[in-house]
Amino acid sequence: MKYVKIAIAFFCFPFMSNAQETWDEKINTSFENATGWFVDGIFAQIPITENVGVPWVLVVLLIGAAYFTIYFRGINVREFITSINIIRGKYDALEEDTAFSQPQEDHPDTIKIEGIQGEVTHFQALTAALSATVGLGNIGGVAIALSLGGAGATFWMILVGLLGMASKFVECTLGVKYREVDENGVVYGGPMYYLTKGLKEKGLAKLGKILAVVFAIMCIGGSFGGGNMFQVNQAFQLFEYVTGAEHSFMHGKGWLFGLIMALFVGIVILGGIKKIAKVTDKIVPAMVVAYVLAVLTVLGINYAEIPQAFARIFSGAFSPEGITGGFVGVMIQGFRRAAFSNEAGIGSSSIAHAAVKTRYAASEGLVALLEPFIDTVVVCTMTALVLIITGQAVVGGEISDAQGVVLTANALESGISWFPYLLSFAVILFAFSSMISWSYYGHQAWSFLFGRSKKMEYLYKTIFCLFVIVGAAASLGAVTDFSDAMIFAMLVPNMIGLYVLLPRVKQELIKYKQAIERKT
Image 1 (tube, rainbow, N blue to C red):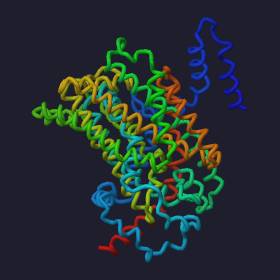
Image 2: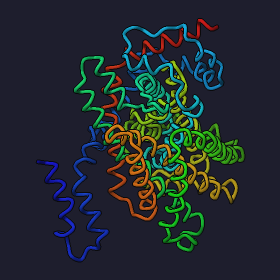
Image 3: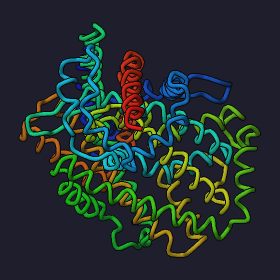
Image 4: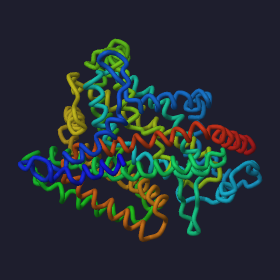
């Protein structure tokens, strides 16, 4: 009954609200009233000091990441070289070794599909997942963290990135272990499948189904909002700013920008994960290299100030210069932005990694642990250094994502005048790659709920492309808050599954390590 009342309030409120409000204002007000309870609940603060609180979702992610790191004895550091070697193809011969039999306690469906090759390579799976996480959070989000917590927030970002590597390993190993493959060789995987199959093995079939459905619903909502509308909206705002702001030839034409993006997105996503992977394995390295080269250029010009910047990061981590309530506030800002950036523990990346060509689930889990390292430890740290050195990391209050991107653009402009144009191009690529990957995540969740027919597939992808146009033209406001809340709500069912299925992950790791030892 509670949800019925919310629905009635949402649809009826526009007719009951102030007659002087525009329809856009009425719709926004209705949406805020109907969904505010959900957003407030997901981002509810646990009070730490009188002035500082930490979102409970962040606490869950951090405790989980720390526990997984301890459980696997520092796998994020201990197996780092192994991860690199897998990407390099050093252990590719293991995929042809069928002599190493599966444990007898494996789920029957799992035994059946583990010998199937999948759809993409280790490198393509990594770039597909990175394309969804490396983006505006690494550019605008870092500036937000520094504006609230000062340079010291960077230290805590790095720490969370390192811990998050263990979470990625766990969820992506499970994503491969419990995936399904249809008669056409199309892979379906992610938390929806390891929650249903894995928890059924533990005698928790009913709980597994409920958690899988909850995850799928949240994933679909997140794909339309945070993985789509927010991305294209921020990309358009930066493009408009760089090309003249109010005087830009695109001013007021967000719908046109969205239409162009929707056409390109549609062309790619209609081809499925193979087409997406073929695009991301070129776009992701290109956009990361372009952005990193621009950052390195600025750092090279100001190389003498790099040691001082690192000194500010380490001293600021324990001697706060922020406005968020002292040391704890600085720490929380770093934690929050890192978690929001790499999505470790959310479960989304395991959907992309599940499509990998392998018979050893842990091999892809080890590849996946590189994701937070690249996303947070490397890219976020470099962004922070540029902001600190160029004086753009001004502590003085919370700023929006769009303002954060502008600060980074200004920092790059201090190196070479045309670098903001390069950043604008990179942001568009970041947004584009995030959208095509999140469309895959959303479609996987959609197919889990509504079936795998072509009709259902095209329906989802058509809706997704329409949201690209709406996102570029709209003033998002509460919509992005709601979609972000849906993305972070995914952690609830996902983390339950990760804790319950940890012994299965350990079995897979032992099996893969033994296979490596047999070959070396």
